[in-house]
Image (cartoon, rainbow, N blue to C red):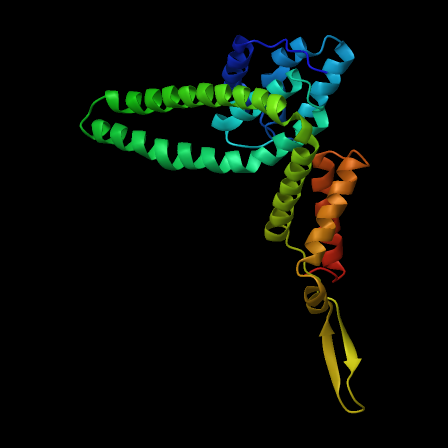
Length: 268
């Protein structure tokens, strides 16, 4: 149900709170703590009930990682959709689907465009002995990124409101598509970054006088390339979703399993 309690100043406040995003950075949920902190004032206005507010904050402390300059866009779109009455599960799917694309845009803009530009200007002045060089780099980067944060936050607010107004009847389909994008991204990451190979082999009798060594890894690759990586990623998902394991437990579990299976000759 729509609350329509947020005003423009609430979205601006959320955009400014995005400056503290990296203060809560950790290797369990990455930017999750900072993201929840950014949303907190807006969520408090949307949810009158403390239990609902607590549940909303717990849900948004989960894993989150994107370019900091793009966070106001995602966060304000998130708040606008919740304030407009969108289902929290549907909003979550869109939030997760936007992480990757916005990270690509933000990284390209801040690291490969703005940083080299202001660094070049600042370095040329510094070579001439001018203290203005580092000052231009520091102020130029931060002022530009502040403007980007505010503009992206405003865009996210407007887009979130228009989604609720124009596409409310299609939210289920949008949520499904966003979920599919998320699964595709995770699958791609699993295949590229999770490396699991088995050394197991067996001898097959080809004829009475000929034997052939068969590699289990080659058989698995013939059926489904990177099968072990996908299966292990599925196990991680199960442990997180069903068993409520933390990232630290998963890391320790992975290290122990990797060492044991390597020692007994199963993994290569």
